[in-house]
Length: 259
Image (tube, rainbow, N blue to C red; front, side, top):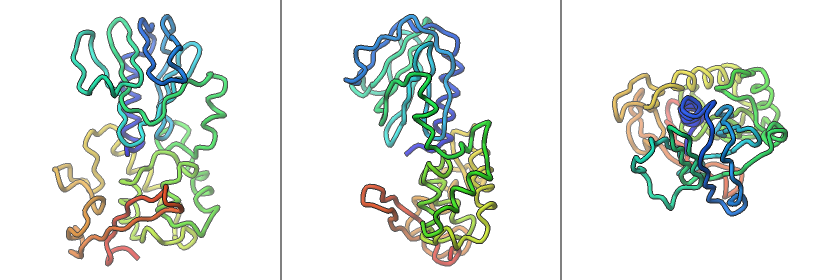
């Protein structure tokens, strides 16, 4: 699942290409909104909020969430698409660009006046100009019994962390993913590291938490089941954690470095 930095980069690219331009063609391939035509409207801004992407026009906010397989592409007129047309959920054309949202997990149109309320449940945005570390700490510590990996992934606490960052943060702070948040000695330090880590990767295509950008050396534990820990050599372990079956997510940890 894309992390907040991926969504940030996609929003930034879309904003650079579309902001201030007029939509000359609109094709929304979601039944609920299939009859909506945004032709003639101006794209005011494209922004991210955690893992959510928001394209605001004169009248609506085009809200999308990439989920597992989604992505936004930009093409010059007449350029072949890199993904099959049947995967397209929305196609917006301007004079210079075609923006296509493929396999978007969520695609809806919100009245501009209700956008803030609709997304009001989200915690502080790690990549937002209004990032509030103290509020993120407060939300994380409200439920001390919740495993730290679950708390970090909960977008109501802080918005933008996905499974990669959650696992890497637990390793870097020496925390078992299952440790209750109330037993984490320094939650402000954990939040500070989360902010620094995602900010450092905000403009990178190849995400790294180790500082090494070589292929196969970018991450400490995530997706490295049974491989040796880069610090101590113990075999990385893998399990699943979550409050319900639908929320289960993979966790990776070092049995020596994390307690």
